Image (tube, rainbow, N blue to C red; front, side, top):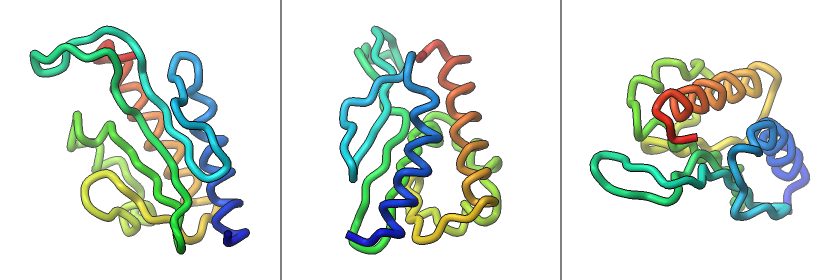
Length: 124
């Protein structure tokens, strides 16, 4: 496994781990990690016991950063910094091959905004 990708994974995982309690990881491995809000809630009229928040996985040539809050509010895309936005593939997955301080800060800001959104909606 690529050492650069392992380092990227570890640094982003540290950002996400800050939100453990109340969020809970279902998978916490050296190459895959995710966070969920586990509570009884209703979203768009459907009862749920959990909602996915974010996750990471090391792929062959990038770290996949999955950011689910953007599905609940597409306006969140407007808070993504330019550098982070360039890495967006599809609606909620970022392919991260290199991580510098600016990009790391943009990820921190996005995660914080998503956390606030989930909290405002009572999902956490």
